[in-house]
Image: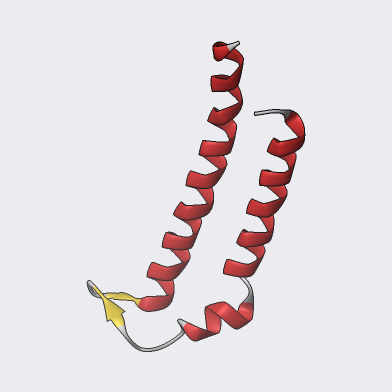
Length: 70
């Protein structure tokens, strides 16, 4: 992956994180409902965080793979 595409993907991931952690979206999950005994908001925050971290790991690992194929 060239550096321009990596930059675009990082910016896209940042914008997704801003959207996922915006107060308007998080308010939708602020209810007394529970998942496996945990508040729904807590489950949402950790799931969204895991998605963002996984995307960042994939972007970071994608650059190394392209250099080996050349």
